[in-house]
Image: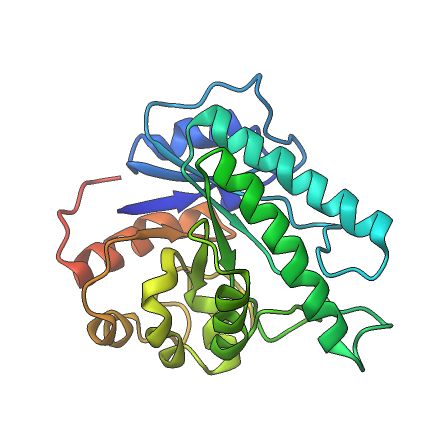
Length: 252
């Protein structure tokens, strides 16, 4: 199903953002954090919802147990919001390396597996699927390669931990085609363009060949979420995806 993210409404009320997108999209991915964080006081429109967990100041791979547990607790709160709003899928980010773990990333990776196992169990109790997102080349993120993402999936070994394939992020790492072999784990996609770095541009403004990607991907039944930083690109991007996938185009 084709949907859109509230990223381009980041500084606005999430309820108003979702209502605006719902006029044209049957699926809305609501980002929990922002200047006005999502809360149970908000009323969401009658569309299919998914959530994007908070990511600023969150690190599930932190060596500091206090910081790590606080991060996990924030993510558990987001799972609770997903349950409250009936959002069956919640995207979340992997952990980050720090000054202490850059030279010994294996320690951070092991901690991350433990954190994700705890989160997957929490999500399973609430019938929520966690979708771990692959990260862009820039920054000290974990989860940049298909090999690493596959290892996470296998080590956590939970039906409630799956993947969000961010096409733009994979493109910055030059490994987009390699993620094809993980299609069985992918329940959600983020789609946006770039010129070699993580820019979240409208489709067609960058260098990604989306027609080739979807041609190689073949049958896919999960969600596709347009995730842009500017609202002006929604119409063009929606039309590009609909044209590639042979979907009916509806005027914006």
